[in-house]
Amino acid sequence: GKRMAGQNKQAAKASRVRLFVDMPIAAGVELPLESAQSHYLGTVMRLAPGDTLFIFNGRDGEWRAAIATLRRGAGTLLPEAQEKPQRAANGPWLLFAPVKSSRTELLIEKASELGAAELWPVMTQYCQSKRVKPERYRAHAIEAAEQCGRLEVPEIQPLAALSAVLEAWPADRRLMFCDESGGPPALEALAAAPPAPWAILVGPEGGFSTAERAEIKSRPYCVPVSLGPRTLRAETAAVAALSLWQAVLGDLRSGN
Image (cartoon, rainbow, N blue to C red; front, side, top):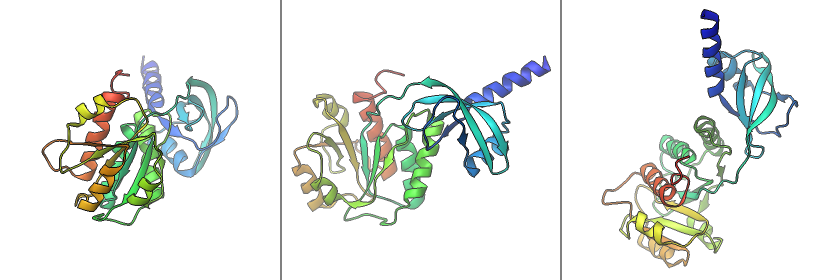
C-alpha cells in the first residue's frame, strides 16, 4: 500500500511538470538540460532519473519525456512520445506601453496565460518607462507557458515607437484600441467585426495624448472600444481586453 501510494504521488508530481526546450524534439533523441532546468527538476520538484514530464518547443507539439540523467547543474531528457500535436496559435498581438518593471512582468505573465501570440512594447508620449528587459520578459513568458499548458511561447518584439509600429502595420490585422476616453462597449464592437487577425493596444498609466488618439483612430484597421467606466491600470486593461477578445473571438468560446 505505502509503495503504491508513493508511486501514485510520484506519477502525479511528474505529470504536472512541463518544460520549454529550445531545440528540436524527436523520439529517442536525448536533449541536454540547462543548469536551471536540472536544478528545478532535481532540487525543487525532487524528480529523479526514470521519472517522466512533459516538454514542448513551440514547433513539435507536446511530448512525454523521461529523465535519462540528472546531476547537479546538468542532465538529459529522453523524449518518448508526442502527446499533443502542434497547432497554430491564433491569439491576438498585444501592444502595450511599458510601465514599472514588476508591473510589466505581471502583464507579460498574464498576457501569456491568456493566449497573446506576440507581445509588443511600444513607446508612447506618456510612457512611464523607456527601459525594457527582453530577456527577463522572455523568461516570464516561458514560465507562464510552462505553467498554463500552452504549446508555444509568445514572441516578444523589440521596443519601438508606437507611430513607427502603426506606420508598418499589416493592413489585414484589426487593432482593438482600448480608449480610456470612451467608445462602444468592447463586447459589441468585437461581435460586430468581420473575421480577421487581431491586435490589442493598451495605453500607459497616463493615457494617450490627444494627438496619439487622433492618429490611432484615423487608421482604417482601428476598432476603438471601451473597457468600462473605471480607469484601469495598464496590466489590468491588458487582462480585461484579452479576456474579452478570447470570449468573443477566441478560445474561451469553446471551453477547451
